[in-house]
Length: 505
Ligand code: FAD
Image 1 (cartoon, rainbow, N blue to C red):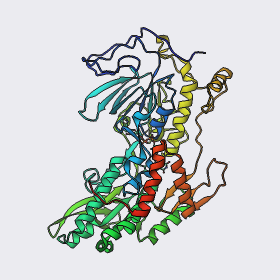
Image 2: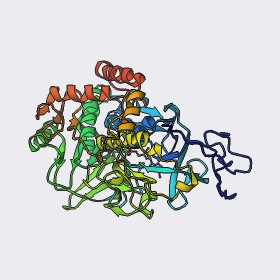
Image 3: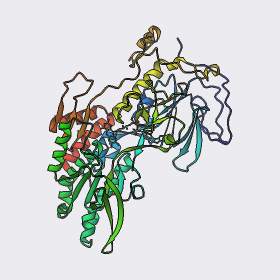
Image 4: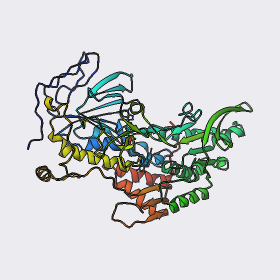
């Protein structure tokens, strides 16, 4: 039962106007004339993955590189452990401790730091654009997996996009956390100068977080920790001017959590003197002049206004351009997939997973969903699709059959894989397993909801120190490298013992 593919003389029509890259088995250099060498030596089907987040990175790691030539295209040359991103935005953790470079994936065929711009699912080509010079180039695939996530949704709110990176910040990528951290320190340094007018000082020390989901709440709690533990020490004269505001358009925060837990979290935020405004949508941001000073003002739908220095916008998701302009069928701006994560009409050649995929069971956009989908798809590829020789021209236009002969989980030994292939157990469709939900509240606090999990553990909820213990130990054990498993508790200890760093660069 050979799972390898031997297909000499595979003919490609090469378009000389395109820049293409070579296969793993031929030269790794892009030729002088920018023409991709023919795939004469190609023996493995190419799986092209768009995105290096929870879905893309997990899949690229788990695919069997003996069976597939695995290629990744992503503007981020690293995987980001998003649940710990709010901690880096105030310096509880350092940025590099929560990422893993794509190139550390063992056996990876190619990685290009670029954005996918266009997918031609008939010719099986993705047009990409490199991040540095904007050069466009094409990459061919046998299988394509779209795992490009979603971007922040501004809902076309007035001036949000224009002022992004100046006074308005998203919290999705590592560079966002770095921008926020620098901005916070900038606000305190500027406000501490005695020449600054009172109206400007008050504005700079007002921080607004938009959105009542876990990311906003966790960031707000981290910011509060930073202010009470570090700002108090280094800028004691400013603490009385600081204002923290959290606004949410809906009637409550942490909507996906058990009601008692969301109320507990809300109560705790209020106890920390955080001004939580529910049923309050941001109508826009204005720039005005007061006594000759330029001021940024947040306008709310209820007619109220707040002068602010920093706004963290974490209020929703919208599709990346490549997806919104694609020919794929979309549902709520996500690519429609079937129970096997296949994009219909693509003959089993295109798959989508994670935030950008709309599965039939309407799963939430979480890391748990993206990770589980990636593990499932890796199993399908490793155990079943690999038996279909897509490099054989006679199979090229055939529908890839349903993964009816796979077992759902990776077996640790080759012998077991062999047995599974021989005995052909029927595979289930992708099935999400609810692992519960957690939201931290800085050092020593948080909420954990295990009421609706599919785990055998007690269906319970936790808050305070118990929740913090579960949260921190879960995320420590989920780190992908030993290096980060060591670095993260070291930084936690450093922040707790010596405080956070307040340098700005
Ligand atoms: P992502 O992880 O977002 O990855 C998308 C990838 O696609 C990125 O590498 C991006 O660079 C790349 N990309 C973008 N555009 C293109 C393009 N045009 N071409 C190619 N590549 C492209 N979920 C939880 O379950 N628990 C949590 O505690 C939690 N906390 C979070 C905290 C924060 C601050 C954030 C932002 C999210 C959090 N989430 C959490 C949600 C979780 O991170 C997402 O659901 C998850 O990342 C989705 O995985 P994904 O692979 O679909 O997308």
